[in-house]
Image (tube, one colour):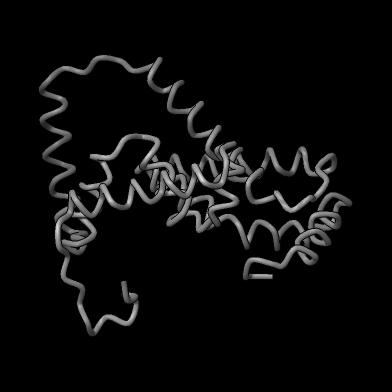
Length: 197
């Protein structure tokens, strides 16, 4: 079950997992963990934190799966838990932030710069990351839900508890704003991963 299952298969896997079937549980984690991790990492920018919250999210799902009844909203439930966990953790970290002297920050900045020089990413990806930081938190969230978590607009509306039309309009405005910030971007025509507009 490496690909996202249809409703009947997902429902059967969730029932089996709730009944203690470890194989079914492993299948569910295998299908959804990379998407949850991708969403969290894109939102927080920290792979270690994203991994920790992904694990925490699946622990919550495991604890509550016995009382969950599948009505076609599992993905929305899963991603809502992940987003809430991340939001709670970011609030907790903000409350616990300690002041740091300037010398320490200068040293860290130099170390981070040399670390990133080894792992250069394509200019287009850097441009996209920079453009995303110029969007509001709500705009970034809807972009991440659609393009990192690969949720449908209906699922995004469920996660955000909004009407479908609102989710569609917010995504459209966020993409338009990204295009305005980034300006014209030339795609490498020999790259088969790039899709036509």
